[in-house]
Length: 403
Image (cartoon, rainbow, N blue to C red):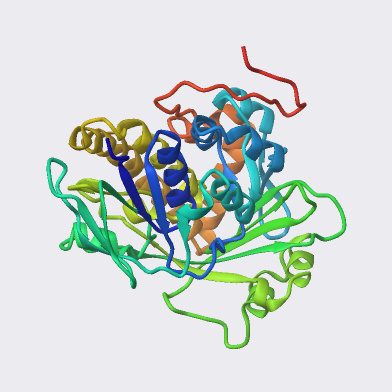
């Protein structure tokens, strides 16, 4: 019996996790990436307990946790440095069954790539979905510059501007601008320790989080028209917008070169897709449910997608039933996540003094009532478990937790 073949279009976190999960379950996997290398888009990524449990399924959770910074106690501030709310990492870990961890995207991409055969990933290979196939008959067809590939399963992991999504759902309006642009960078650090923080201003925010290797992952967002760019460079733009905010923000900006600052306008799929599959072709990650980053769940949901897909779509199973089960599991969850993230974004977009004062007052009041009330926002998100039951092998202190 021939081995079932899966073709993944796109090598981001969702695509590589899907490839690793499918390969682990017995599929022959080919990953096609348009770029000439597996350079990740973005700087760092936060992995919540839900995505870590998904990574446990493919045997990668412990290695990720060993290389990541475990999120410590921090808080939310105003640009002057006044504390609005405190975050309790121990309470979060207890409530959701594990900590929030942070690592470089390049590290996660490398770990996922290592789960695949050397011949599985083809960079510099643009791919076009010619035919989605039919679950009960015709195979899907993917065109590359050198050949047309027939596949039993095609995974569209080609991001927010997904051409695969357009082929599957040509009448869908596609992504819309969220009203925000974002900057991301990794800094060598200000030369001293500090607590992780997120700072909310008027129509803008900044976040700084220490990495395990001593670097600092920082991100910023501001409500601006789509397509706006700095007249000089984006480092200078950050200094204009955030240079008078509290320490260590000015020092972090000053420590990076202009070409180390990434800027992207944020688009999201506020109009949900009717399904994540058609025929033998399925969508994962931003291709299926791009969301604004204010819940920190974009990459986490892509990882969930990949593991749930591999659970439902086995090489010897009924493909149509498996894909239908995947869509049934993922569409409602991710649709709710897109909407919840958009709700949070509306709070960050506030710019009028009275509205910002009211928002800040509410944050302070909620924080004083205890961490449980703040953490309740993430109930149903961070406490998610994959279809397969898994156990992490190593705790923060390096002790085994396997039964």
